[in-house]
Image (cartoon, rainbow, N blue to C red; front, side, top):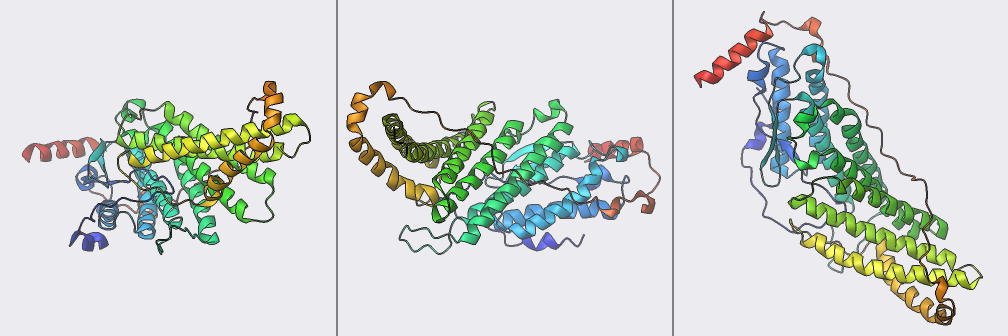
Length: 416
């Protein structure tokens, strides 16, 4: 068929397994598996249109397998092109929604996850893959390639800002999946989906992408001389809200599987870090008050932050050890600063106001954190235009009814 991806079929080799470092959580990538589009669509749409669909789908699979999903630009371009063609299969007027059995597998282990005869399932899987690629790109930007071995992480300002943009883009893809695609798929078909395509899981990943974008913004605020304590507290509280919402979504899903358990540990780790940061900055603001009660409340915040920080370290370790095993990055962003400052300030302030803590035992209650309206929003994903190859006025097809086509397909299966 003259498929440009055929070059990837030769000399493909699997990389030796390595323990990867994780900054941005990236779920397992799912890629297209072998599906017979030619047989399913024979005589119903032009041969060259079928060939383009099949060729692009094969190209996406081969490039992903050959590069481990690292050829992000090439894959994104092929997915967008494939999507513009795939839109035609979802149109009711074409009557092709349930003709092709689409198969997908997990890239990492090659395990077949799903086989569904529904064009919207294919559509969902393609946009989901675009989201995973975008998360992968954000993760790669936050992990410097030139490790010095000193444990000091240097990520440029541009990389951090680009990573935030990518996280918003990924959140937009996933929000589109939930809002525009999943609602078009019958409930009985969705029951057979892999667990990472559950509505709640897609929502959670979209929300946690916003949380990680806020985490990077908090790190940028610490590097800025213009960012006030109020700004830092707000960002920490927003980050906490995002991870709280993500955990709430996941708690309603079936997460009793390998990747699900690891995903939950990641959310818990980031939730605890965000809560520690929020209480620390809230304590600093309360401590500026002149009343004894303000200082007591501030110390309660600092001590809570210290305890949460200790819990977050345990959650981080549990995340790293949960299969598949990963490495946590060296301290970066806000946490690099807070892992040093929180214990230091908690110790100093509790000693400074120890007498107040004794005198005002009735006031020793952890204050509520302020509630903020969330700043970050997912980018709006705009679908590409349907490819002009779907202009039926240009089609030249042999006269064959859908019933005859289905009978022909059955005869081919019987003679195999």
